[in-house]
Length: 145
Ligand code: ZN
Picture 1 (tube, rainbow, N blue to C red):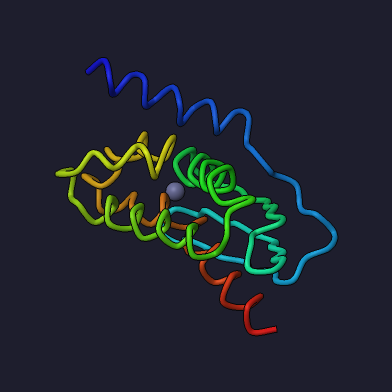
Picture 2 (cartoon, rainbow, N blue to C red):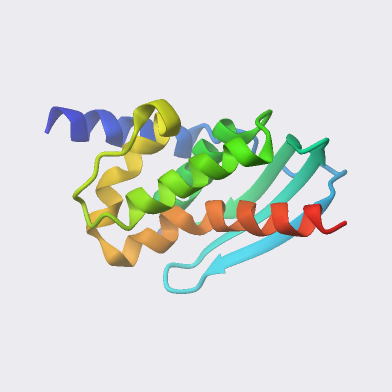
């Protein structure tokens, strides 16, 4: 219970103070992802430099889970190389598919472990994954340039 309260706080904090929100005008790739079942929308701009994520910015509307998750993801991947960010992405996807059975590797996922409880609610998993899937799509698109 105590842990749940702490996690709620991390999610609310990212929701109220979103990191890297506000689109930068220059980017290698821009993607727009929606989650119609909840009404979440995210536009994400990504810049790669020598295989690293040199800039990532986003804008969006939607539920606290979707907006907090994209904020947490931004914090985690900016400045990392694409391969290291892929490890984080894969770890988060695995956590979301765990049906509430996993707590997540805090060394890799940091604040993102606060979303572990979402994996118990199938309808909300798409909310949590929206920003991460947008990121994945943007990397593909930027890499193909
Ligand atoms: Zn949502």
